[in-house]
Length: 230
Image 1 (cartoon, one colour):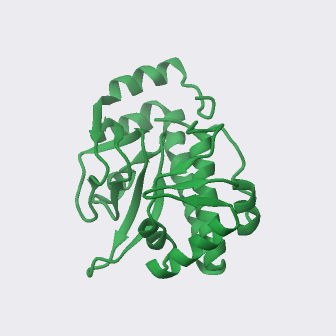
Image 2 (tube, helix red, strand yellow):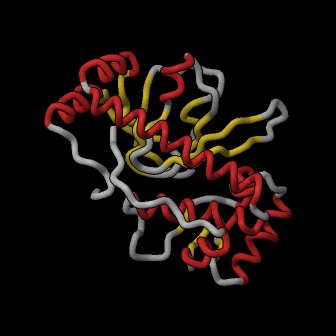
């Protein structure tokens, strides 16, 4: 995929040895649970997932969405246990890495170490955008931003770049991301559909006019750039 930077030969040899296998997960599977340790790191190879935190009464806040190329579980390497949970939105294929060799990566492959830092910084930038949206955009602007954001991320990794893209989320996922009630979410998404910006399906959203979504959200989108792959 042209959106990812190329490996140096020695990096590719190390990553190939770092990898211990692949994991297949079904939609709805919990990959990592808040408060629990994990013995592995994962790179998402195909499919969609989301990262979230929950309150004791079960209410949840979706923090971000994971697409191919994203690294899962890095936080556990730093603080010892997961501070969030990760659930599969669709069937997934994940690359599994040995967590205990992470220090070897930083010590012997500074380029890959920088890549992990880049991925962590990129996640922080996305969270900054999400926080701005939750704090200052109207409900309809928030929804337009979220769908445009997911469309842009999917297109960047080659998911349906030439056709209208189907984002595999339900209205409950949108509500849990935007901090809205399900009733308010339903009304908000109907307004976007009435403007012919999206078409809401049973368990997905078809993006009809991404430019219109960007304009409504008053968001320029993220600039295209080469990104690393671990």
